[in-house]
Image (cartoon, rainbow, N blue to C red; front, side):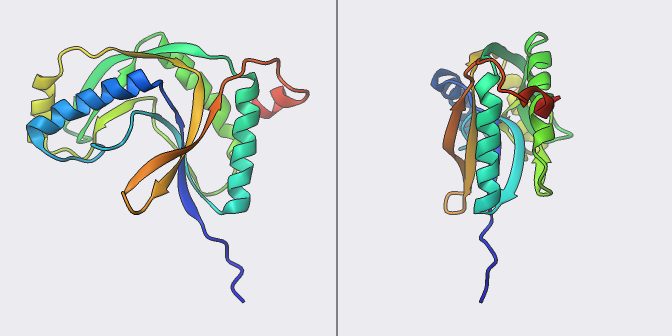
Length: 192
């Protein structure tokens, strides 16, 4: 009898408002019109906090953990306005501005320690990807294509996305809103 539980890949992300998601889609469409298909082309805008592989029991832990974290977390406006097109990384990303970066770094710093399973990979610094695995000539096109970028949204929710093998993308399956409540008894020690 095989008792091994199925494991799936998930990502935990800051999930922007639909308007910001649409604005990123416009940027991705602009790049696609010049270079053709590229990695991240079809991925909705998000800011990755962590990736993990889990079975059903482990996944239930993540749900509970995110609910507890969001219970006391307060929403905050963030702005992404610094576009980087890096030949070294083969990526085009938008970074948060000077006031949003510390907020997002602190959010990640408080959130990540509670993810204790072995199969968790933390995301990099906060960014929104426009394109990944781009060729050097595509990076040059992107540098000329995008002059100013200004994406802002109320950072008010974390989403869990599940990898869909059929489409080769992560899809949002749960959203958890920041409720801004006083911390529950014992909650502070969990996140410090």
